[in-house]
Structure formats: C-alpha cells, structure tokens
Length: 111
Image (tube, rainbow, N blue to C red):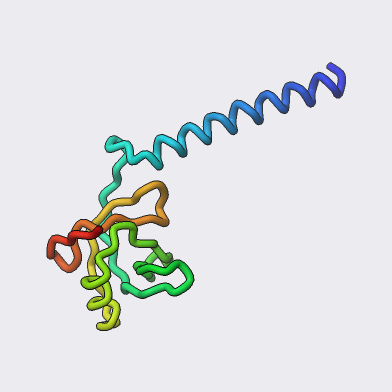
C-alpha cells in the first residue's frame, strides 16, 4: 500500500468518526429523554459576571456548572447566603449545563 492510499484511508476513517461524534452531540443537545441523567449535587450558587448568569460551584468533584433554567430571584437569595446547598437536577447538552428541579428539597421553577 502506498502513502497516498494510506492517507486516503486515514482521512475516510477520521471523517466517519467525526460524523459519528457530531450526530451524537446533536442528539444529546436536543435533550433526548432517554439520555436524561438525574443527579444530586452539593455546591454553592454563585453569580458569574463572565457568563452573565448563575452557576453551581461544587467541590467534590470540583466543577462549575452553568444553570440553564435560571430564576434570578431564587438564585440570588441562595447566592447571597453563601452556603452549600443540595440540588437535584439533570444535565442539558453536556455535564457543564445543569437544569435544576429542586433546591434544598423544594421544587424549583426556572425560566
């Protein structure tokens, strides 16, 4: 097999893998209910000026999750307290985007 043929085969393989990755990402971002993962997370709600919204900052494991369904009045209250809260929710699109269903055992309605 010559170099040209090897590079062509490699390009085809890369293209197929790319297409699979894109299709998987589109399905995940569309919010397919079969892929919904409910989580219980402890962290502090903080306002992030860089993103222009509220985030949940966790310590175990350390991460910063952008809250998709923001209710500014409720989140501001928890942010000002500066205490760790327990949140139930699920991810939207990726593990960096969180939709909150409950905060501290109370139903949460975001916008």
